[in-house]
Amino acid sequence: MKVIISRTYNKDETLGTMMVMEGERPLYKCKTIELPDNGNQHNTSCIPEGIYEVVKFNSEKRGECFLIKDVPDRTGILIHIGNFAAGNKVDTLGCILPGAYFVDLNDDCNIDVAISTKTMNELLVLLPEKFKLYIL
Image 1 (cartoon, rainbow, N blue to C red):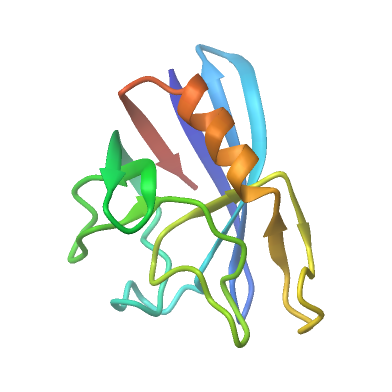
Image 2: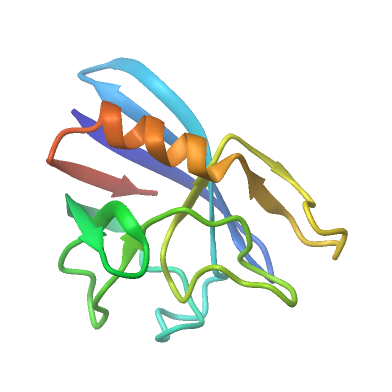
């Protein structure tokens, strides 16, 4: 099983489509939101494109989530619940936030992801303890 995130880069945030694949067969599809691409700077940027090993992880702050291992020059990068990557309220310092669809949840003219908790719970059930993440 592998997970692919195909990204679109905007000035204020990075939007993605996540596909969970079993071989060539798609099993699940959702959206992702991240910080903009600021050259992999700590706390202000999405992580670089690449292939990463991911493991299920229980974070004190974020609960059940996924840890993305061996991100160049970064640590503690997760896939976790959250809705906002731009504007006055931001739920990420470099992590990936999954959701069902894009919408402006708080009327601040920024794109957010909706239904993040449900989406994350579905990913936690579907995905194995360890998998490869391909960020394109």
